[in-house]
Length: 187
Image 1 (spheres, rainbow, N blue to C red):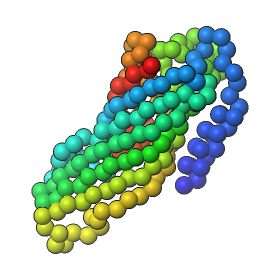
Image 2: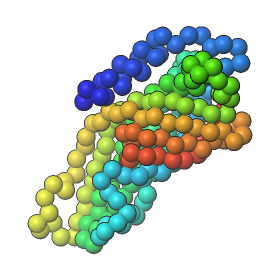
Image 3: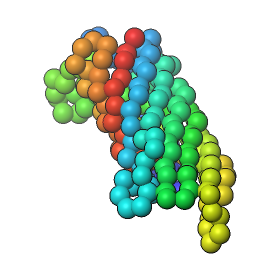
Image 4: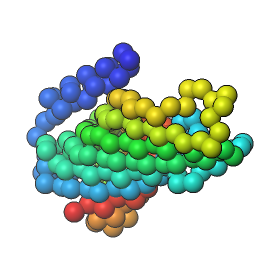
């Protein structure tokens, strides 16, 4: 839990201490981004007696609220099946992202094209709704419907191959997995 609070504290420090953007650097204040992707799940693999019915799918929207910060909602869904039962996960929540490509240029005295590559860290928070169904519940324990709250850090990168379209990859405590990949559209 202390890692989550440390990541949140770092996020807030970066937000408060961020300087005004230099002419030519990316400004996220008037930017909106919609993202859609798939995750590799924490505890439900593609191997063994279980199989995926609906892959872990994630959709999130980001709206610029600061020169380097975006916030927005996200949703995720997945369904897994076993020979005699089904398990579904639906996540709903909010996320905030700090985009730090300009800092890398300053730190490394680099020439990174900030309109083409976007490095960011995010904090996500939300509810996970778990649903369980079985044809035979005898001898099955720990598989009940429940709701749980979670919060976690994510680090990611987007590469824009046009002015509007990008691919992205994230690692960390995502909505339904430790690794998420997908497509993004900026407008």
